[in-house]
Image (tube, rainbow, N blue to C red; front, side, top):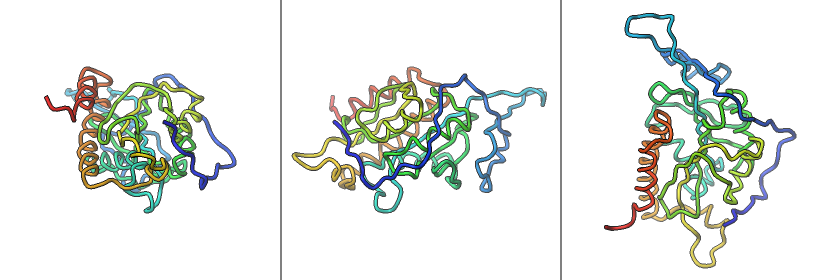
Length: 258
């Protein structure tokens, strides 16, 4: 089902594009010195010492860019189209990563899950131009495509049902289209889809997307967000393994009574 296009969004005068790069490893101090005063101008780094205190040994990790799609402003807070933002907020709270810097038209936070460096991002240029943040951030931090996790709403899934995939198309989602356009048209990046269901009857699609959840739906989404954080942790630490397969299977049948 095709997502509507917003007429209020204005494209910028220029755009940057990111391309698939080799598995670049970026280091940051284990003490996580990028705190409240971090302005996003320093490369992500991680250092780990061996038990024998050999300080010269460094373990390198490829960073992850985790992007939630949505629209900025109180007007859109809590709407169906903004569940990607909500997932970023949930990760931010549970992992203690402050979203306190603006870079490339996005609100970002730098931290780690376990020892894996991550960059959380909420593009602020409206849904249809999300790629204008994702492309430059991926290029600046040299994040390979396979480590860009895009989180967004999906009408083809029942409300609160999620799906975590290593790649895929845009499914007529304008935000995803924008991101792909700024990643040289590539679809080879992971995505976490959060189901919001289809509009009932003849309801206008745009009105549905910008509508807040009912109480029952809200409870389903809140539960999904908690489950989603655990799935993201698994992906960051172990990649697409059997746990992710089981997660997807559990999500597919979560509302089916046995």
